[in-house]
Amino acid sequence: MNSLCRILCCCLLLVLPSARLSAHAFLEHSDPPVGGKVHSAPAAVRIWFTEAIEPAFSSVQVLDATGKQVDKKDTHRDPSNRSLLEVSLPRLGPGTYKVIWRVVSVDTHRTNGNFTFQIVP
Amino acid sequence: MCELGVTSRAFGHGFAGARFFPATLSTDDPFVSDELSLPTVSTIRTPDDGGTRETDISVDIAKRITPQFGIEIGETLSVLNPHEGRATDGFGNLELGGKYQLLKNGPHETIVSVGLGVEIGGTGSTSIGADSFSTWSPAIFFGKGFGDLPEALRLLKPLALTGVAGIAIPTSASTRSITVNDQTGERDIEIEQHPDVLEWGFALEYSVIYLQSQVQDMHLPAPIDRLIPLVEFAMETPLNRGAGGPTTGTINPGVIWAGKYFQVGMEAVIPINEHTGNNIGVIAQLHFFLDDLFPHSIGRPLFGGNK
Image 1 (spheres, one colour):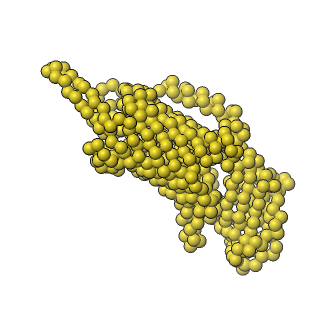
Image 2: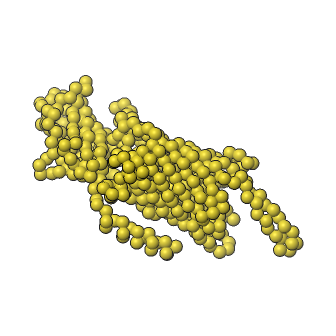
Image 3: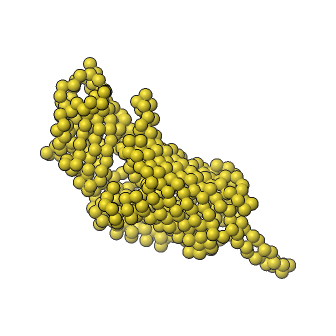
């Protein structure tokens, strides 16, 4: 048993330092928040991811309740934060909006997701 | 050796659409992936020989050959502590497997795979009851996330179900052993039947990760924001050769914490009936995502590019 434990520890010590750490990009948080309600129309949707992302292969779309895309189609990565993706919005009225995101992290892993937020008077 | 329905292959993690499925501890799930379970440790007192404490330490590795096909290899060290008598330990039979992903539907967070596993007889230690014959196990696997539920049920969207159904087919229908009575000198022949066994199970999980990132940001702090509470059901039903007895198995409630590069999980192992046992055990696992640790080398498929 002790021998096996030593072998396992050695394997871990060998494996982990040689790892090139980079991973699937998860949504960390967003503005407006996932499932949240805001009282004033946001100027943009911002999504912070857990990994740096490739903007050329990443997108954020905002749809209204009828499924019509209402964002300004200018998805871009924040110049000072490689994990922050944002898309500008026109002045939106009250309602429920769906955000659909697709990203490729810098290690080429693809992830996607969606969430809604509400603008209430 | 009583396995209590808990098997020891490398169980896959993966994505289907927006859904991240963790690697489950006690039942196999449908994902083909690059990963390393190092180690999985389980311990329980089984009903064998008047009560035997069985502790298993296993190492499993899975490797994608193509994005849809992967192979698995696993080995287990078992330590048996009987109620009376000496403890024994030894390695179990080598386990190999292959899995092919038949279907993946992102919008409906659905995946279906088929697989074939083999426990190679005679590669393990007879002292811990490793079989001298091989056992083949074809199986079908599925996973389904409930992210497509209507908005009225939005707090149920983080639920997901994975499951497996397969048949373990031994290459030997029975084995016979001869014992000699020390006092009378008479020889007794004991025949042990090896039935085909339906192996089935499922895992119901609720992903706080999914809740936070797809449904409702609850502003939960770490490490709660990356927990996946789950309950697994791992069952075995003998089918033939006079052993069509009751189903044995365990119900395993627990929790997984999934990070970027690895996950850790722990479950209670609760026997479903007296045929399985009367004592509660525990299983714990440290599991590495090789595709995230080594995205440009061993963490990607050998052929066919990345997923």
